[in-house]
Length: 189
Image (cartoon, rainbow, N blue to C red; front, side):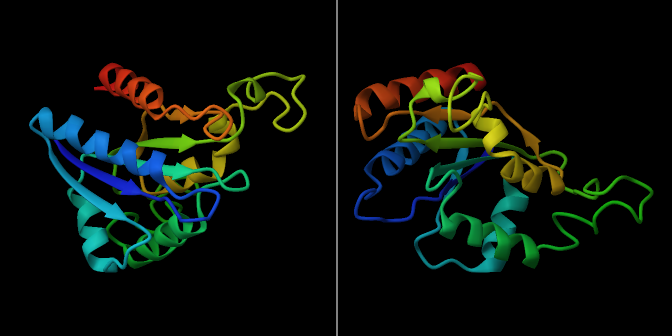
């Protein structure tokens, strides 16, 4: 398999990136040990748009890592997708699908590519999927990330089961977080 790891971490004083960097590093080792070929993009570093388009076209599976800042992916990760996807027209998608007689959003060309969203939250896991919770009102993590998943679906990619870590500031335990991530990868692959 060709695996692309996209590290969407964006440095803030309160979020220096140790956890997301550790998750990306672990994923790289995990997939290298399976005989997969692994490429990595770090959105905080300079990148070439055409090379990123080629990496996505090359990938069978893309793992996208992001801390959650203000209920979404980082600004640099969103900018990455905005620019790379705009640069890819005709290769990731062929219009919006309506010219081909389909519904809006059905023009994606990456139908053989899968993706997985990996997020790290300060929010506790109890804040999700419970109608009595104040902020998310019963919504799941994937519900909160509807726009992110729609962006990937627009390109034709297929969603794999997302993975989220919670309470990463209140209860930091990287070893436990890595173990949970490993279990998720073992189940998913």
